[in-house]
Image (tube, rainbow, N blue to C red; front, side):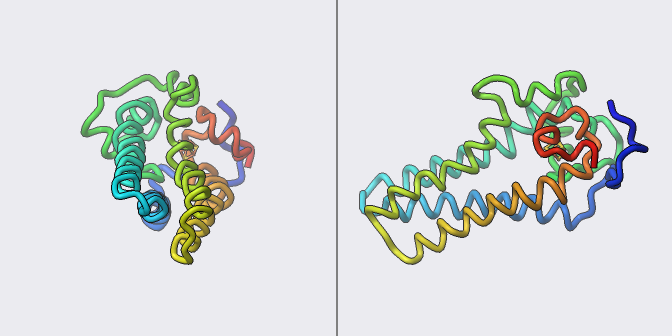
Length: 187
Ligand code: SF4
């Protein structure tokens, strides 16, 4: 583990409430807009729009708010420290529904094709990919606005939330593969 004294950014044991709200607000908005966009984009079929939209919503919320706290958070440093609050707040939920894991297993969140990290990325990107053909065959201004809104949320996540609000200040960043990918460990 790198020495904290070499880092410039403050590491948060408890993230500010504003960070937790921005993280979860943008996540929930991303999922909701994605689900609505899929449902609207495929509404020319009596069943496809609602079915795909609802399936996406169930997948994305379960991945983020069930699979993550059951499989990733128990291995995180935020799980075991009393009164700590991570940027997602999921360490609190995880303590209630999962047994403590092993810190050494935390990097495994990015191992394997169906690892939690990949499922998380899929939940963010699927609505964008699904709305492209829908825009071609079933164009509407509302669908275009939703599509652009989801793209903005994705860019906001990768260029603002991860590098400036979440991972930069995270006490798990020396173990987390995502922090390494974001290049925030030495900042
Ligand atoms: S470094 Fe980023 S992705 Fe990794 S646990 Fe911390 S906030 Fe989450």
